[in-house]
Length: 315
Image (cartoon, rainbow, N blue to C red; front, side):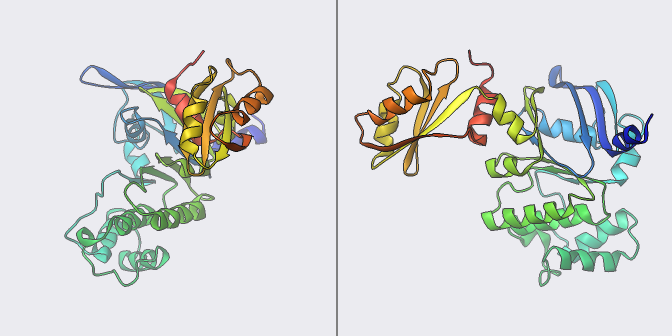
């Protein structure tokens, strides 16, 4: 094996093949295979019940797959789960720290659990790094959603994990807290592989690679740009005083798949298999009986991409 090939292999943090998991006879994950390199922010997408959380739990050693094999951080996901757990920070959907302990007490407890040297000092440093100063003695149960998520992330980072698994880490928090959490994640990405499941479109676009699951199967895998180019849609915007009226009129065009008002414009989707061509579409939009001032073709966005992936094949 060449030096370049050896380096490429050592950069692969997750390498799994054919992972399958069933609960009560129902297959939740079906034959999932993936390779993920170090220093990546990797997004898991899909509707509720698609297998995202089950996949994350198999990768970090909390669930044993019924079928399939692979490694995480160089350790076998079946036989070396204890070793995997030592190097993983896992942030669950629900706040899982102790509600009746203070911020400081929770972090000191987690530091001791992972045998972090000088647990008191490590907790103090993490409080400063994640902006939790002034809340050290506040009970975790009394924190707002955004502060709870910040504390949960602090607990995940205490032992300097090589892999961060984040299950909907910004669900239920305000926009400012979401931005702050993402800033912290971007600051960590060079040293850590970050796998994140999320339903927010702006967060999806911030991931470097995406895996879309539906009914436990991998539907699509690639960078955000690669997924956008695979979607067989054309996207148009039509601006005017009454976007709802424009959308209603656009839906009457025989080749339009969907049209709806978004702010000050109507958003129109046309499947490539049915399009009469961009010039034709733009002429039809300009001629709608709804006072269209400007019609333009727009790049396919992540909203259209994910909706099309969720719909499945559309001839």
